[in-house]
Length: 275
Image 1 (cartoon, one colour):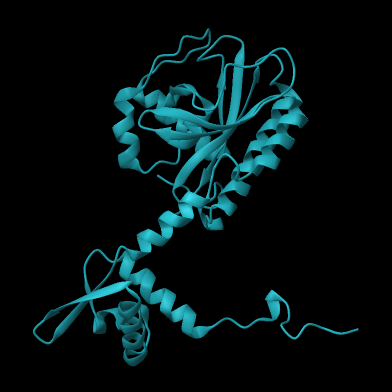
Image 2 (cartoon, rainbow, N blue to C red; image 1 turned 90 degrees about the vertical axis):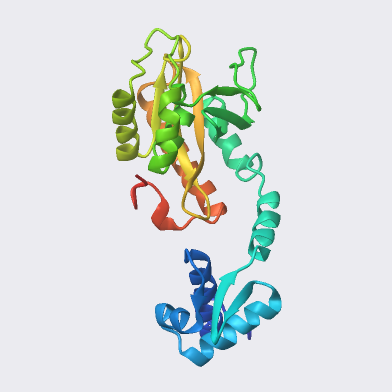
């Protein structure tokens, strides 16, 4: 039985040269100010000569630029990295990133499954796996709802950076459903603490009578919350064991979408908490 000369991924040794180059590039991007070669070598713990070879290569390829002041050279990254990232973002369509999984969960529950993203103080539904039948929920791609009145919006808000959340707090909308909660900031922050503790959000007849939903967040490559995936159903149906299945499903989908977007595992709920 022959074996491949290339070996498996586990057999392949990592490249120290590539590792060092990426370390230098990441440090340049992370730094709030330009760095001298000496400072860059010190903070990355890479030998000065090696560090110099890396930054000169990055400069030649257009990923770094230097500013010369006397005998000192100060390095910073260029926006060519942004160009690469933009190309990648255009290729990642949230409406299709987990289409099969959305459909599978919708079929399992007999309820629609959605993906939503935050736009200002609103949640925009960007994808939906509908269910067949005469009764259809008033959720559709492009629908806009107040962020604090949906499980999708709460799942996102719970993991926003503090400054971003502070900017949203004056825009809390009042619910019109029979179980609408008070819209005070203290109460909403307490609700978000519960979301972070459990890893998912709920909404029960607060925005609309007879309708409930559960949702879980997903995260981008930068570790920041990028959106949420949720299930919507009649309150009488989205209860008990079926709710447990829905919660497990949206949490699983949130983790899967995060992985496909390149999110580090440490940024997922339960591993770290975004304040």
